[in-house]
Length: 154
Ligand SMILES: [Zn+2]
Image 1 (cartoon, rainbow, N blue to C red):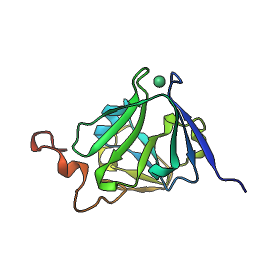
Image 2 (image 1 turned 120 degrees about the vertical axis):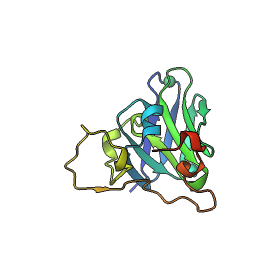
Image 3 (image 1 turned 135 degrees about the vertical axis):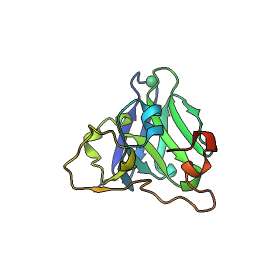
Image 4 (image 1 turned 90 degrees about the vertical axis):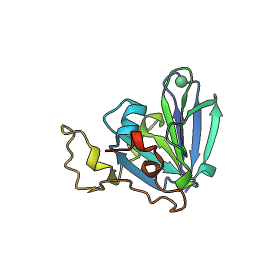
């Protein structure tokens, strides 16, 4: 069997990418930072190793608000694309909307269920974690740990 290859593109098509091999993680994410950054009630993140990612065309723009967290997007159409965190250095998360065949990525767990919107309900039987679904390096802590106190998560 040949290696799995997934293609990705932003809304305007300037940015295209290719992922080789299997993703190691797929999770729903209900946290408020991602909700603001992506503009959706929740997101599904698809986790790959950075070495599996190849940018085919375009140039990623980046933005960082929380120390150690870098989000990428298309500078032309605004599509949210990636999430990287220093606390999980060998993990690259891509938005489900960036994939050309998003139906191939069924999530396996809910993250930050404690922040889910009250009208978002699921009957999928998946685990609902109150915080992150991935453990961070204790040396760096979580993004919530790194936030300045005045904007700390409730
Ligand atoms: Zn674009």
